Length: 411
Image (cartoon, rainbow, N blue to C red; front, side, top):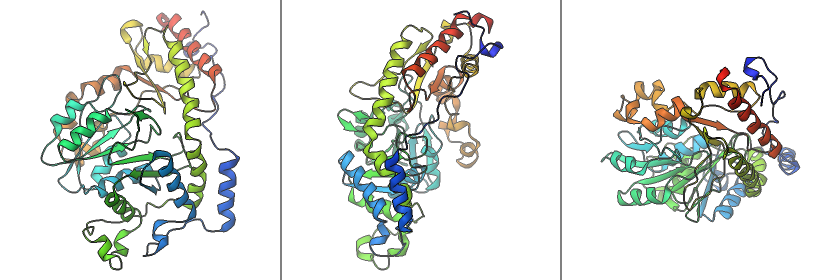
């Protein structure tokens, strides 16, 4: 290619923005309208009785999750962040307790521990799948460790089989932050079902979405009971339900309730989850094939006996194979109209952790060399595989890469 690079004043490969992410159909719209016509926009009351568990649509949404993931309990909440906090609260995490978690994740994966009065303990991650490194998890366990938070990042399961064994051997709760990997599989099981609790997101950017929302699934009756108490001011029902809730007086309840409108929108999204994932997988597979001829970018590795559902498509940039830096390459791609970025700042670089959490030894960047390299030099993510984008959009993406590669000496 000989076209002048857009970053140097040339014409971009894509002169108009790609279509925004939108998976809403008439099914979701009609469901929302049906709720609006009833005038009952929330089914909750923080008092003993059936309404403590929610309304018609939230209960139906929970049933859809139970059916899809073949689990005993599903507890809807108003965000995955709420779900993460509720899960750790249900697990009994409190002051002095530690939760092992990846520092390469959205902040809520770790702040959930702080919200319970606990301490997030960061461990380095695998360099090719970006999930918790099991050996580092084992080394980080102390008498204060209460739980392991496994983040199934970008759409790929963590090494959940090994982490399950580690948790069981050490009497720890395993929580799956499954916001980015709904209906991925690990060793034949759905993500979200291998941990003691699995948290799903219904945020506007996620594969299933209703604006804001989340669901926690579990097969443990006691955890389900505690999750429901955290969700809806559970302390208010203790006097009347004392025998049933005896031993759970430590729970502080919040308002983590999902509205009926949100639940109504989410229900058909859950029913379409496999369809929504299939769209991403087909585009991701096509992009991976196209990238085989690009030596300075590596496509995602898929863990053995697992599936990837590509909430984002991660690529490893190899600066030794092209004469520009990762950051300059990202700038050039953006100039060509392509949606690319680095991923999140490692959490231990956020002042909250060093200021509030007593500067735990795991917050030292030198303890997390894989995360540091990914953040500073090699990670690139793109949402180019999400609906309603197509193979033609992938072709434009690859053309932009080749255009930059052919003129990289100009940068």
